[in-house]
Length: 136
Length: 121
Ligand SMILES: [Zn+2]
Ligand SMILES: [Zn+2]
Image 1 (spheres, each protein chain N blue to C red):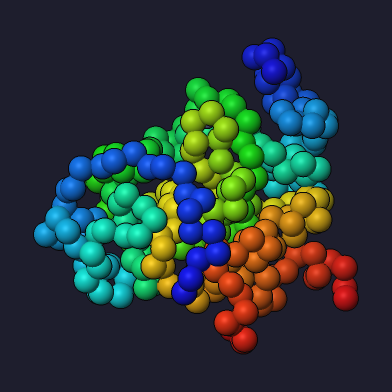
Image 2: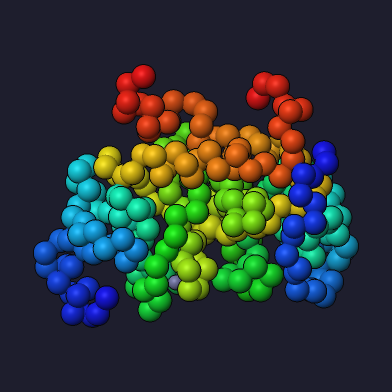
């Protein structure tokens, strides 16, 4: 899926190559959500931190993205989408084991349909507070 | 706000919003203790969600996203402008509905890919 604004990403710090989030070989990791083997190199980001197919991540960072200081290693699912000032989408991940939240930039090859489903979740289903209260 | 100010918050059960200055009752209409201003939706970083317990940060937290846990109600996601920590909190009945809706539709207003290819979802 072509990106509308492919070159608006701000430059990211270079990170050294290290074992993948799933404890993989260093250049790939196995997704804890869909078991897909995912290459660490991702278009548009210096380091991939979620599966491009199901968007699942692993809780390895503690405070700062990339610090890898968490011992939780729980499964993190996409909870919502944040739009930054420059229009960039950021996935809000939620750890199913400990409840921690993290924000992760999308990669150029993330599944557009999966991203859209997360973004649409507040607007679909019976949970729309505004419309409920307005009794439309 | 000063420490004296935050102590009186506990006594009188109101707080002044760090962003818009509105005096807000600490208890929402549904009887729950609220953590963000119902008018501008901003909050303050007073709990440490990584370590647990109170946070030394006490900076302003900006509403950044609406999130929906599986089979759950809308949650409001905040990010601390100083330290970047993220929190989620439930909504109150008197929260500003138009600001909430603006947050909810923002991703669709600024998609990173063309939406034309998606008919039904
Ligand atoms: Zn965790
Ligand atoms: Zn903070």
